Length: 118
Image 1: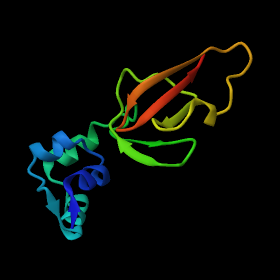
Image 2 (image 1 turned 120 degrees about the vertical axis):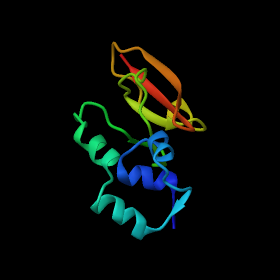
Image 3 (image 1 turned 30 degrees about the horizontal axis):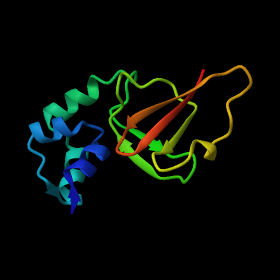
Image 4 (image 1 turned 135 degrees about the vertical axis):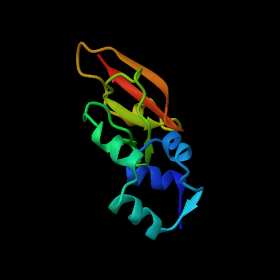
């Protein structure tokens, strides 16, 4: 059995879409395989509408410890130089290159801080 979130990740759909179209809180691998192999009209339409410009899910990875988390990307996220878990020190990543100014942005995923050198 897998969770609705895991199913949404593997189907590359949002959690909202998974809930809206009745994917149960827990489904079997066989049910997921059936959705992938014979997508219902809503899933086929979702896949047909993809332009590739915006990912449904992105994988965030800490540059210090390697912790990973799949999350929905936000429009307000800037390009970042490094990504760290909130409990790491700023000294755990390399210093910015000469002439660049460093800033931090909290709130990516459940525990990440983006380090932006610009």
